[in-house]
Each structure stands twice: as C-alpha cells, then as structure tokens.
Length: 266
Image (cartoon, rainbow, N blue to C red):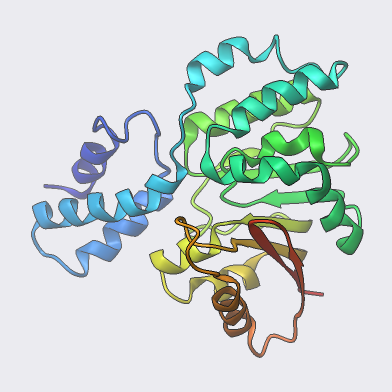
C-alpha cells in the first residue's frame, strides 16, 4: 500500500474525517512507524494507535457546524455580557478550559502583572483557549496567533477572531513537527508539555528553544485526574531538567488546579 494511500485511509476514516489532521503530523508519524515496520498494514495499525494517543486529548463536545451557525448572534463586542456568556459555554465543552473557568477573572491579570502586557501572543496547541479573550486585558491592536491540529476548531476560532475584531491568525499546524517561526512577546503552552513529552521524550527543550518569544508560560495540572496525587514536585523537576544549562530564569505562579511556570528566555 503506497504511503499516500495509508495517510488517506486514516484521514478519511470515521474517527478522523471530521478533524482533517494536518499533513505535517501525518507524514511525521508515517516516517516514524516505517522505521519500525516493513509491512504497510503494520505501519497503518501503528499510526492509528499513535494518533489516538495524540488526538484524544484534543477532542471535545463541540458541534462546530452548529456553533458557527449561531456565533454571529452571540459574539457582540458591544455587549460583553452576552459575549462572555457564549464563550463560557464554549470553554465548558473541554475539560482543560472548563477547569480554568473559576479563576479566569484573575488568571491573566496575575500572569501579566509579572510579564507585562504583551502585544502579541502565540497560543500553542490552543484547544478552545482563545475563547478566554474576553477575560484578557489586552488592546484590539494585539496579534493573537493560535495553533491546533483540529481543522474545524481552527476555522471556528478564526470566525470568532473576526467577530471579535481581531485578525484571523489561527493556524492548522502540528507545532511539534513545525514549530511556529512567528516572533511574539509571549507564548501560552497550557497543559500540553507533559503530553508532548509522552509523544516524544525530551522534545520540549528543543521546541522551547525554537520559539521566537521573550517568555513562555508553561502550565501543568497540580493534581492527577483522580485528585489523589500532588504533581507539582514532579513538574518542577521536569521544568528544571528541560531548561538545565540554558540560563533561563523561571518564576512560578500557583493557582487552584494549575501551576504556571514563567520561563524568561531573554
């Protein structure tokens, strides 16, 4: 089975057809699995298994076609209460952003009190996080770049940006394979570094070095999913190991269920 057929078979399957996974992600995994297996069938099976582990955390309960049909009537910059109500509903559709809802009123204000008010942001593996914009104390002249592997979500975010008065800067891209080259003041990397590490051990160091930003805000959960174990000591060790020898300064901001490591590259 030719490589193109393997990729098309997976992308057109019921599980992934609605997501439209980026080509750089598919080609990267294909090359990895070809080094392990000679049989095209084994390669495809291994690709599907790896994709499941990568994509599962990005899935949510959002019906993007439906939300696109009603968004115009709900995103009203002149009506911040209506806009926030709609964004709250969207943010509640994924566990990661839902957990942050109770602290949104102070979350960004706390971050920016430390790093200053950015004029440009990279939101890496963004998920639904761009819908926290109504809580971000920034000017409409800012540049907000959002990156995700879920194509319908990227289209949805770009429509939101347009209605919110921002440039449509959401990009369909696997940032691990193709790190953003865009220069920016800061990068949000919320609750993703540990998943990247599982996908490719040691990759975060090279990835963070490649980012053309002044600061990287790396957040990680303070507890495991069952709330049985405190993960903060483990995450501190991970951050220290990843940045060892790079002469970067690191600050910590501890929230209810999330710790943010503020990494100063400059």
